[in-house]
Image (cartoon, rainbow, N blue to C red):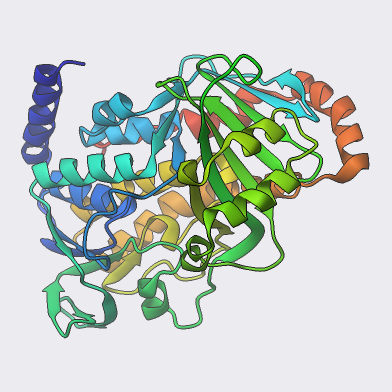
Length: 418
């Protein structure tokens, strides 16, 4: 898409922001968290006629954030509603085919017809696009504002920050990730995210005759000791993601404090008997390795909201990365929350309607991810069984029925919420 076309698309989205506004009892919102769910929520709130300010704990936008993530067709459709999808497509790599490899033997996976490709985008690029789109919609960002507490009143909520400052609004929305402060403010007994026993890394290597794959193809590989995946980027390089089994939990800060060459020694040992895992690990240099940290999964959260505070995205539903739906679920929830606040004057009633729209869907997808995680280290006997059963499984399953409900999900923004 040309620059002029993209600008026209953004202008049209801004016009939609004004035209689709409806009277609501909520006029202002505090959004905690500037990653993915926060900017999308704030942009959707502006589209609904609600003023929103995003408060981010870190001192600046994380431009250097490493690693990439997948946006499913349903997530891209939701981004279209706020005029951000084209800018994401411009920096993403589309994946049109997927396959599964067990001990190096590939099996083609079925695909849904009539949906756009999976889009693989750098996390830092996605943050930048979503921040820019939110700013264009009139969202204000404040960095270096770490939430420490909040007090609800009959008329609104006051947020308290580590710098001693405060902010007030009609509602407060927690888009602050798996370590959510807002979740514990709503319910001090709320469960935290579970560690899956896997640490994630992403590496980049130059394509070569003995290490090549077709553009647009992503391979999910079950190695002898660990799972990994790989694909070719738009610039011709190969990208691979490693899921390294580790009984010891390591926070992202702790993992990034370990020298990259030390992690590479462990990755090379883990994938030494795999093809092409061995070559991918050997040819990744310390400068081309992103440490993306422990993989989490959220158990069901009993309380999504209080009278004036509510959770969105990974703060309330973080499925395993095995689903390919984490970011897309967060984006969907942001749009649905904004619709509910637009149409239902009472905040607590709007939050209840939002939970009713989202809980069953996100928990079903989270359960699918948990089942997938259990297959990532199958062992010798399990891998032999997978060679036999996997092709049979995919021939027998109704892929459209299983995955269609996930990827064909669309939000009707104009429809009123009852």
